[in-house]
Image 1 (cartoon, rainbow, N blue to C red):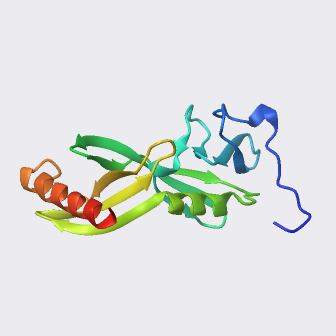
Image 2 (spheres, rainbow, N blue to C red):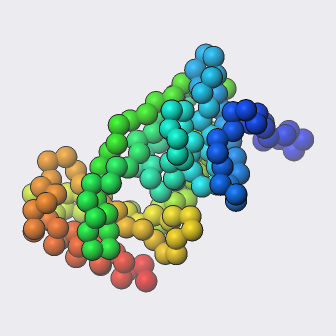
Length: 173
């Protein structure tokens, strides 16, 4: 944004139900008509057709093609002792003809939410361990996303993953 350029303001009629301390950082209309809006805030991403904000910590992957923003949300699968197993929720794709600062804000905010990430082998497969910053929560929230085909409920996999999460926590402490 240039020195004298003003940030585009999201019209009040298109503004999502923001929390008291939430502010819009960037937004873009979706498709040719621009009826739907994708809005990036300090707390997360508001997407057309969703009643609730997708927190930055819940975005597993976001890709900007130059015309389309593709978002892969995390879907909770199981809660373990001190960590959560997540999987890819259905991929969401939005055509943004005038994206403005939205792709930059999405990338920056998702990246900023990551405190730790590493891919590890476990018996019968592998998984990515991540620690994410969640607004309003002290410390990091730990998640594991297993690679396809990994036996996620196998006791050996659960035990080894727990050991790996504990080691990562210790390394960051």
